Image (cartoon, helix red, strand yellow):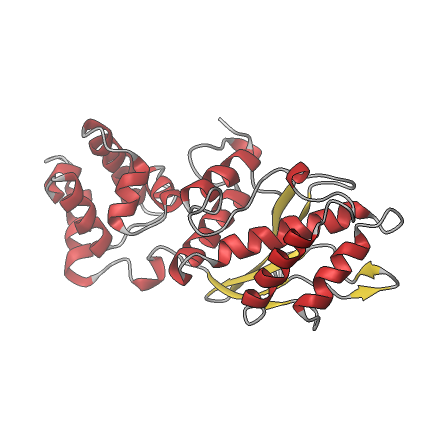
Length: 287
């Protein structure tokens, strides 16, 4: 990484703070994710010429404000960015795109074929598989854990829960205008009796709307909600049925977003799981 990246980012952060401008607002104006701006300001990601010009416009500064008269190398490097795009498209903010989702609702031996939901996202030659399931055995809230395909390490690690919930709030997955997802397992039925007709009808409707975008294991919406009800029975690990309902409501709220916002959300979630940015210190510890 060049010295340009290390020195321009903190300067951008300084000018932003002088204006009293929140990072989330600047990121929105620049049409990039808040986590990506965080990485730029921390000197951990490169910035291309087009984005640099937009930053200057939004902060009402000149390119020369990012350098000093004695900093000839930095001035020359900025000139090169504008003249011949030193940082080409490959250094533009990476945006991962959704490549399919799976939430198996078919039964094998009276148990779900799979207890989790999988969301696949891709960017270039990189592919991540997000596993969404209860945080531990028994009744519990969901965790969000990615695996980068081709890596020897099994997983990157769970994305820090507080940051994930903040991210979901930003994207209106929590308390959304068109769909409701509650981050509390107690809100969802824990047995067959509590999974009443009204909620069964609601779940069936959601599954019907999602069937073109999510693989439910070849099960029709009616059969799927019946399988959930059976799994909520006392002998069939009811916490799995409870977790599946959490996953279904989350998927439905997530899929209400515009496609571009879904992709940005997944990109932000990858950065959170990688524990990159100024909120983290060595070994992914939170500052």
